[in-house]
Image (cartoon, rainbow, N blue to C red; front, side, top):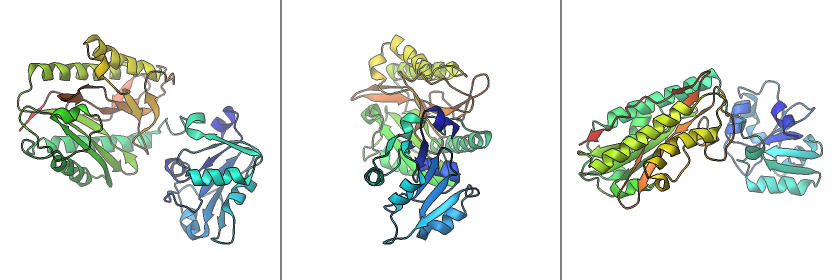
Length: 353
């Protein structure tokens, strides 16, 4: 609550999603039935849940010390219960809250106003403790093993979708409970940063961008590597080297006290100086943890000072429309005096068959 009060807020309302799991260990699916953690200044926290879900809420790891109030279908008004649990004032509400729930809360009372927790409290989960970092490190190591294994499989003549299916399978084989995404963009499709892996057959001479990850022990992995089918052209080799240098430059810029935007600038400077500034079309990084994209965002305009325990991606890229793309991505954690990579898969230029 200290962070809430520092922002001049009267409390925080938390719907199902990563924030609720982080604060209580309770991770129900988001449904039309309202579940909400109510944290109001000067009051004990209360978890409002459907009667149907009370047994699960009571056994959540963080349930001790929580008051649990349940409500029954067709009998109780959960929005009135939440409204009664918070004095009039200004409250942050988590970004995963369904619009229908927020609108119902707004109809319940004109004495409560709501602001986005993502804007008011962007760093709620940004600084990880050592246990969280270790989970991210383990997920990253598993993704590294997937990359090492995929290199031994055939690329030429297979479809992007087939390679993506191999990546998803390998993520599960290496301990991921979920394989959330496996982007494979070959040749001209690699110039589309979030290409939907399709039926294009990978051919000799292609650069192949592979961006993949998922969830292992609740925490996310996310790695990108670009490989070449057969020997790359001089231009492909040059672009790859520029991206690798930019990624290293960003990594070396990471240390406590540095603004997030300065890490973005470090990567962008290398690419711009090489004449490809207009072809680097996205931020350098995003935070990672219980979500694959969360604060802090490594982007121009974000003056957030980095702190030890913050974790985020370092993933510059160059995209030449209609021809090919190159991206290299690792997850990093800010340490007391610099940074540590959570991915150690080879960043050397790699040729596959």
